[in-house]
Length: 294
Image (cartoon, rainbow, N blue to C red; front, side, top):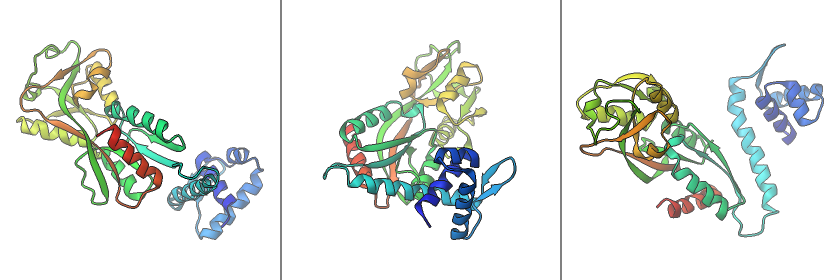
């Protein structure tokens, strides 16, 4: 197996078009097709489903892609290692985050990383729910992730970085918009907007548990992964959303954040990473995170 075969495979996998991949690699399409066939003979299976109109990855192709990318990244790091002065931390990190729920912690960390370790390349992946984040950490396709705590993984380490009390996001003209710390059970007849149950979101679990503790089962009118889009649906009058108070200053026009009274319920935000030995870049990031987000 040759490095150029992997380069060709990655180009075709990302473009899903032999002509575009050939242009990207600055080679003719026929030699590219021959290179892919050589790679498929080498690994002993078909990596692409080809037709006159489309190119798709087979199941084997999907499984092979992250490893091919890993090999190319390791090669790039090897080349970089001989060019970077001794003692300088370098490398690549993939960081998963949900979205607006991380709007306070994420900028602090990324700015601090850029200032302290400019040689570390950070790849940010958004809209990653806790369950998906844990799966990617366990498989090695992600290095660190913002998650809701607790997680049920025995293969990851976690650290609490923030605990935010919950409140309600309601339409600006809602009868409760100006209420002084209403209790959650006063929203029992409302339609709720939550993450999908299948998304593996701690926010969904927190919502259902809090409503049950308040004595009712919420009617869920809409399920959507992105918390900011949930608030947009609140503005549209679709329902209300149970969210932590960190979003109070970023709610969209037409909505209001209402702090809740009674016994406070908190959303626990954390960082998670695999228990497997990590890179020097990951260790440096985690040490930095302890200083920035104690």
